[in-house]
Length: 88
Image (cartoon, rainbow, N blue to C red; front, side):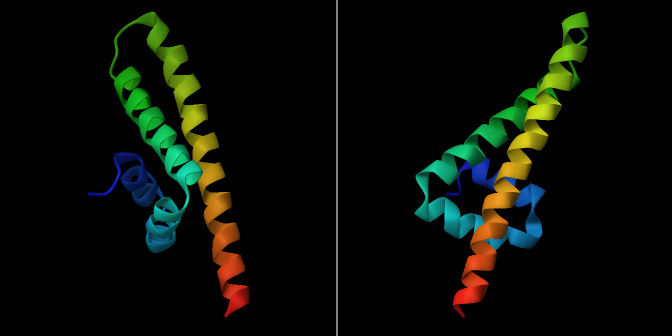
């Protein structure tokens, strides 16, 4: 079965699904990054529905974290995709 974090990354970047899956199989650090991304997305969803005053600032923190992790994933995938395109 596909790792939950990898699935979250594929949902975010469907056009790079194959590259994300291949990288996740080959690279433990990338797989871990996807895991962090999935957990941050889950936390953002939880805080988005929480009624407390603290929720607004938590929601803000997690939405920033989600975007930072997404850019990191995207940069790694695009670098790998470019490298593979040059090798052909």
